[in-house]
Image 1: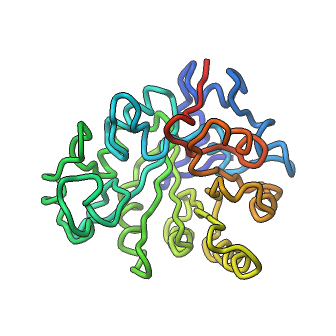
Image 2 (image 1 turned 90 degrees about the vertical axis):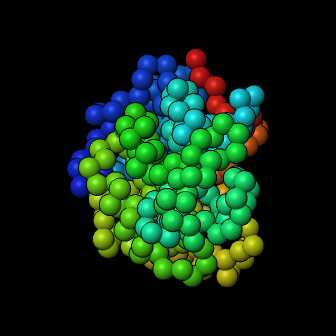
Length: 291
């Protein structure tokens, strides 16, 4: 079944993973990597449909950052390193004061730049002049990242919503940037209103719900997650590794909904991923090895 991106179809064949890449190893089940049988596809009849492509890779959390080279998260060099390693990528996006989508995680500039203050109060002109720490270069726009990736590997875009702010401006801007992009891509968010917006206004875009059970155990937390699922209508879940195994995630997988696990930071987390998820969003020493 072909999935659509930016109004065009993608069936996984237009941008196949390169030989020896981590994504290729995942598809072949080689090199000690996860394969469809080892992950969630072996349970409940398998993952199918337009989100199936997500299970073919593991995803470098905010790019392949840190390590000996000191690459900065959500920077173009970090995403270039992930591409070179044949990995999928996860990024975070925020909106500038004048409506441009940037790849940036935090609500404020303080941690990743020499500037301070709220990210969303800065114009694109100001943001373009603020370098990331180290050798990260300028804060990239989503358009710049899409141009660099060029459909070579899957990209997960986490849409960052702070509190009860309206979701429409950022969702609409992301959707506009994705028009004409034919590579494998999906959006996701903790906020179920994001999934609902895309279901209503851009149903061709694969959408996910980011889930954590931390601070939400018991019946009340389960009810909130169930309502979020109904509201967001997600094609996949991105689930907190600390909460796996989870009956909620297991039921989703039995219905054929892929579950990616975040954030995998230690090599020993991979056992949990293999048993209870369909792929991982990882960073640091948990980077998977392939041969």
